[in-house]
Length: 339
Image (cartoon, rainbow, N blue to C red):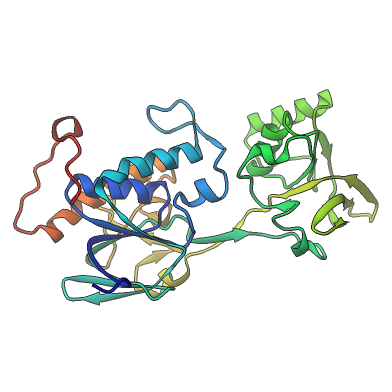
């Protein structure tokens, strides 16, 4: 078969935590998987945006860093030998004999009996502050997410924003960076109350500088390296903050992209599914994780894991119509040999 044309049982769209677990659950019922993701690495937002951020609600793990969770999930799926198509986006989803054919932005085509859409929030990117010349600093001393805390060790860091990301990273970096300065346009933050209380306690002790109510105004530096960030008040007062790095946390712009044109039943850019199987309105197409919606839906990774298990078992009779599926616990079945 030509390298750019493939056939499999299931295509999983999205290689985030829920997509990776969907590979495992499909493998447990002898379904072969190919996985497509627009990012160049597996893990979705956990890998791209906050690999060192701790997660506390994964069963059996009182605390686990996002990157470690991704590594564990990839290792858990590995016995089933999934094929990954990374750095490419699914552009087309077309009905074909016995299933569906997907075409990616690189021209790869994959035919499958079923599709699991685990695309999270869809394509995402940062909301950039409107600062002149900011592009020259991006990736060098201006960042929109943190992949390694140690990158900022001994540096003067300005953190801009008032949500959970800004507050959480201020709390995380204050004992690594030489100085942390948090810029927000008002004194009230949109973060968890406990986190905001910790932030203000650290500010009261002098461990963190709260620069409120101010907002970003300009950047100073050379060759992509910041030397200062200027901030301003609504009255036009300007202040200069000497800094080596700026972390701008103004949220993500998200869109589901081509998924919107596939004929799926959508509810506010989320895919409506049956809660018992995660089936969509298109026969053989399922949706799990943050992109799926139904009454009572909770956007939690652990809920996505459950949805992946339900979808895999709903797909089984589509691939093996003449073979009944006998439910077994993993302690009884073990991990079946990879297909």
